[in-house]
Length: 465
Image 1: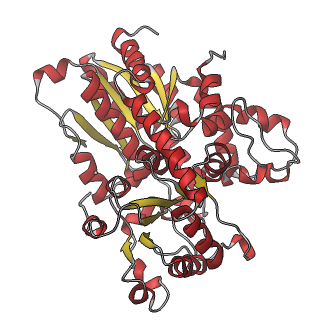
Image 2 (image 1 turned 135 degrees about the horizontal axis):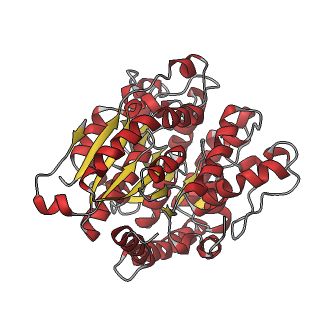
Image 3 (image 1 turned 180 degrees about the horizontal axis):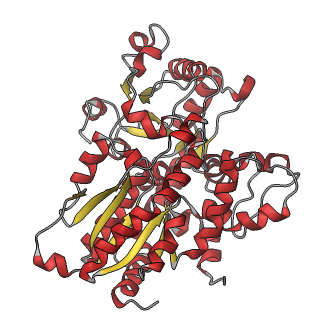
C-alpha cells in the first residue's frame, strides 16, 4: 500500500527515485534519510520500499513522519516459514525474502515508471538481487551501502577471497589485508563468514558478486574516517518515534558525565553477560543511561531480536540483577528497549557511548563528537571495532577474559572509567572532535558528501549512464 503520496502537481513532474530497504529499523532509517536528502537538497520525490516482515507500529510512524513527497510502499509478504522452522540465520532470511520478493518489486517499479519520471532505483546491502530487476526495467540501479568502506571492500573482494583462502577466516595465519584498509585479524571478520560451509556464508559471497550489477555504489561514510580506503575506492576499477523521559533526565546531569549504553535496534546480550555489564556499571560509579533489551536465550544469535525485537512481550528491566535499579538510581537511568539515540548523543551531558559498533551508531556518535567503547555483537561489527580502536583511535575495547567470550564486570569497570576519566579517554575525545568537524564539513554544500550526491543526482536527471 502506498503512503505519503502528494497531490502537488509540481512534485508529480519532479524526478522520482525508488529506494528499497532491507528489513529492520537500522536499515530503514538511513535509506529514508537518503530519500529525505534527495528531496530537500535536490527536489526529488521518492518512494521508500520496505518488506512485509519488518512492518511494525514504530516503522509505520517513522515513515509517516517523512515529507509528503517521500512516500512509502510495502512489498507483499512472501513465505518464510520453511526457513524459520529450519532455524535459518538472519542473513539467509534477509536474502531469501529479498529474492522471493523480486516479482512484486518488478511490478511495483513498472507502476512507478508509468509517469516517465522514475530516474533511478536504489537498493541497500541485502537487495543485490533486485539490481538487475531494475536494470531490466530500464531504470539505473544503485547500491546504497549503509556500512563503511572496510566492509564494502570486504564484500567486493569476497568472491576472490573465497577462491584463494584455505580454511576458515579465524584460522588464517595473517590478518586479512584489503587495499587501503586496516588489516583485520581473521577472527574479527564478521560472524556470517566464519563458517564457509554455511548458507549464510554462501549468500554473502553471492551478494559480493551481485554488487557489481550496480551502476554505482553510495556509501554512508566520509573520507576522514577512512582516508586510505576512500582513496582506493575512488579510483575506477573494471569489471524519528516519541521522545521518552531520558532527555529530561539528561538535562539534570553535568556536562559530558554520562555514558550512553546501547546495542542498537537488534542487539541483545545473554543474561549472564547482561548481569556482568550491570555489575561493571555499578562498580564504576559513573553516570550512565542504559537502553536495556530482553536477553537472548543461551547460545542464541545476538541478532535474534532483529525481526521481532519491537514485538517482544518480555519487559527487559525484570532481567536486571536484584536491587540494581535501587542501588544505582542516583547515578543511572535504565530505559527499556529504545531511546532517541540522536538526541541523546547530541545532549551536552553525554560523554561517551558503549556501542555494538553498528555503522549507523558509529556515524551518529562521530557526528556528535562522542568517543566510544566498542562492544561488537554481530554482522560486520567486529571489523568496525578493529578500525575504531586500532586505526581511527576513537574507541576503547574491554578485555575478554571470561569463558565463552564473557566480558567480566571488573574489565567493564576499567574501560568505563578509562573512557570517562583518563588521559587516553581525553585523547579519544579530542580525536573524535576532529572527525566531527570533518564529517560536518563533508555534509556542507562545499563538502565531499554533498558534491558526490549532487554528481549522482545530475546523472539521474540527465540519464547519462
